Image 1: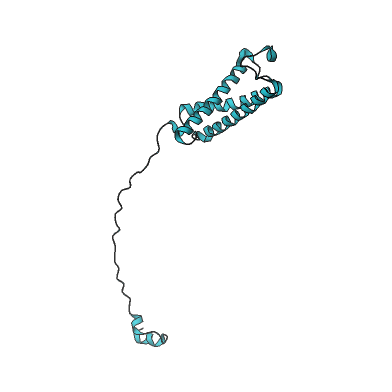
Image 2 (image 1 turned 45 degrees about the vertical axis):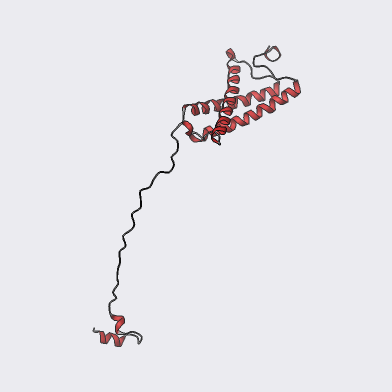
Length: 167
């Protein structure tokens, strides 16, 4: 079919110029090359990430010490005495070491807070952060129960078994 017949069959608004193929001018712009990226800051690769030996020891010690302290404080509040010495003094020793562990974790946390502006890192699975929080709660409970014990009895039991408690 030639163009004249197509023109006759097309709507009246069509013209011969609309039947000509359109030409496009393509231009290609080369992208600007970006300068290589530079590292502006890096994290420290030290034991501050919470995966060091001290952090793992604090996690293990704190996970044992905090429940022992809760048991000790409950026993102190209900009986007026600490935990019994146990076989060979093992339970009493565990109680004493647990108090030291909690005080050590709280001290480490306060030192880190003063030095870096934030507490201990979360550690693996967030356990070091959890132990830190539990240790602060244990310290608060120690202060409350020891204070109540002092107000009621006028003293707190000593670190060694006495005749009053286990005589």
